[in-house]
Length: 616
Image 1 (spheres, rainbow, N blue to C red):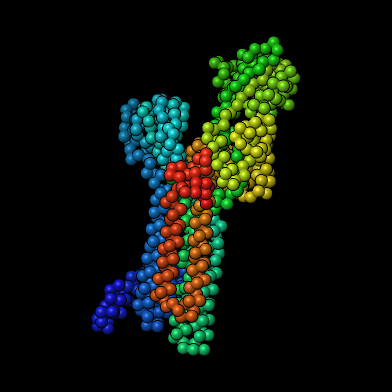
Image 2: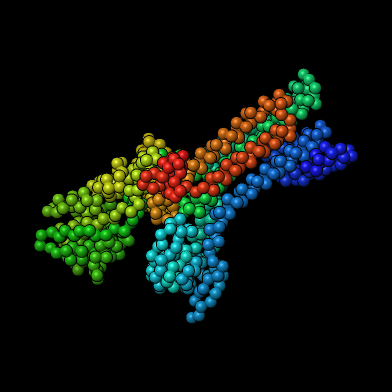
């Protein structure tokens, strides 16, 4: 500015060029050294075009033009770095949820230490209102934990002895003693940040397109500029055509294209992480934005994974207690959710011996010398209880038959209820145009009954893990598929889907590693929120790519015809670069909101509620 002002004011001849040369040196040092280092490794890029253009302008005596180019390009580079740093801070801010100090019991006394000094197996003391310094298991005390900063869920979670607590959660009104299960460097928050930062190097299709176009474009532009200069020199004034070649060089530089998608990806991932959705890189973000089919596992996804016994039907001559005693004895050492439901019905369950699991069927064992079995109808003959078992399944329950010494003694109905928000979320997904299917290993009657209550028409039941993966492949006939499951039993299906989504994955290594996207909370509202956010972010990516390519298409003819000079082209180019950066950052400023039953975002509701809630 001083250089141009001194020239306009009629200052002595050396003043303006000296100031412009100083401006050129200051601006060029932000990109020329890095460009030269890349050139020494045989790599060329946008900086190469800018460096050649600046050198050429100086050779033509246009120091002011070269200074303007260097100044404007350095400003754009600085804005890019700022936007990337700003959006990454949103992710790194997760680590700030860990308090600066923690209280630990050592030698029978309470001591205050830094979280990094906590060791696995030690006991933390967490007072009401304090944040939990690292992951652990409650040893004593009861409370309601605020996990909203981590999972995005506003409802407090009741917790007591034996329950797991996560770093960054806020203790409610009860004092807790927590056994440390993870160091500060390896707790759930640290793992999430490390995984996302590592995965951010993965590129989505939009980013790969930007790279694919930019990579051959740079040498292509260099060759075109050389041809323009050479042919122009043969047909006209060499200085005029060399200058136009330099202007074309700058006009065709893919600066905006090179940064348009990365800025959007980083901004979108940061926003998602602040709202309880872990997106593992640009590839996962774009894949989620393309999804048109949502396949949902039943247990733990559509349901709360808290099954309960709703009916016990003893065979003639048997009692309810006899049926439950045998079933609870077989399930005593099982980790299956049905085992906990049946065990909860017996105050002091016996323990069967020689218990063996028959995959997809049930359990066998011995109780007081008798052979006992528990399992699905078909594996165990339903006999006189066939109609009862069918009725249980028609009501959406899992029917479990119990056999004692070769004789059927009863049937137990266990049902895992739908999540309270399931119907609302599924109705919203249908309204947004998604096809929804349920995949489950449960029997067809039970699965169909539950799907009917949830509002799902496409039901695929009695599936083994490999069957789920195959079914996901079949669903691709409708469009790109997102498989939503627990990240463990559904691992083959998660891998087979275009996008694997783990539900309630906070603190689960397997879920986070298996899926492309992890919903850190248990609220099913996270799913439409993630889909809407990804769809909107993908639209922003392609807006940026389109704008960048359109800019090159318009500027090159204007530069070639001499309508625009070097400074004007640089100004338009860098203004466009600032525009795509600002548009990309927009993906992180307005996090998507969950769908409500009427399809609007809440709150505040946009003018076009359905479109906005769907991410359009």
